[in-house]
Length: 402
Image (cartoon, rainbow, N blue to C red):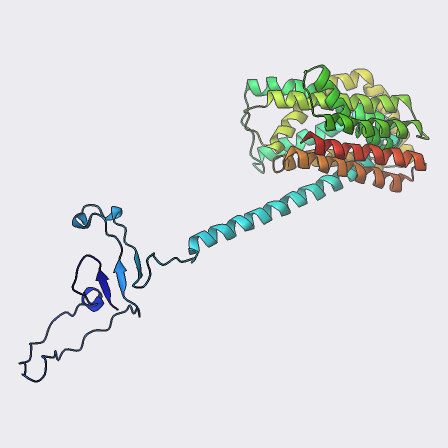
C-alpha cells in the first residue's frame, strides 16, 4: 500500500508506516553495475490498497498526545477529489432499528389483545347482567355487587403484591370524589335501564353519549367545536330517536335510565380530565380506586332504595324459579363487569382517545348484535336502521372530534 502526504514531496511507503521491520540487515557493498539491494525479507502488511491514499487533513498535528479527540483524518483515492462515501450501516444502529420495530409490533399485538378482551368481556357481562336482572330485578343491589367484587379483587391483588398498590394522598381522593359520584350515577342508571328494556335498546340509546358530551361542553363549559362535530350529531340524535320510536318493548324508565347514564358519564369524563392532571396512577389502579370510592357512595343508597327485606323476598322467589345457578350468574356478572372496565382503562393507557372512541363504538355493535341473537330480541327493520345510523354517527363524531 502506498500512502503519501500532500505537503511533502518525497513518497513515503505504506510499509514504512504500518509494517516497519524490527531490525535491518547490514547494507551490502554496492557495485558500479548494480544498485545496492537489501537481503532482508520485508514483513507483509495486513492492509492492501491498489491505489495510493492521501491524507486530506490532520488537525493539530503537533499536539497528538494532548488532544487526540480533536484529530480528524480522512483518506481518499489518489484520482478522487472527495473522501470515499460509504453507506455501510453500523451494527448498533441496525440493532436499535430492529429493536424499535420489534417493540412497535409487540405494542400493536398488546393493543389488539386488549381490544379483543374488552369486547369479549363486555359482551359476557351484558349477557349475565341481563339474566340476573330478569330473574332478580333489583338493579341497585346488582350494581353494588359489581363494585364490591371489583374492589375485593383489587384489594387482594395489592395485599398479595400481584399488582403494585398506587401511591395516593388526600388530594388524590378529593379529586377522585366527583368522578366517583358521576360514575356511580351512570352505573346505576344503566343497570336500571337494562332491568326494564332490552340490552340492545339500552346500548343504542347509550351510543348517543357524544351528543351529550358536545352539548354539555358547549353550554356549561363554553367550549366550541368545529362544524363537522356539530354535523355528526345529526345522525346520532336522528338514529337514536328512530330506534326509540320503533322499539317494540319501549319503557320510559328504561329510556330515561339510559339517558341519565349518558349524562352522568359525560360529567365523569369532564371531572376526570380536570381532577387527574399530573396524577401518576396507572389505568388499572385508577379504576380500582374509582370502584372502591363508588362502592362507599352507593351502598347506603342501595340499602335505602331497595333494602334487605326486598332483597330477601326476591331471592327466595328467584332461587325457587331459577335454582342455584343464579349464584353463578351473579358472580359472573360482577367479575366480568370489573374485568371489562379494567381492561378498557388499561387500553386507554396505550392508545389515543380517538382509537379508544372507535373501539368503544365497535364494542357497542358487538354487544347489540350478540344480545339480539342470544335473547332473540324482536327487531324491526326500521329499528335496526335507526341503530345503524346512530352508531355510524358516533363513528363520524370520533373522526370529526380529532
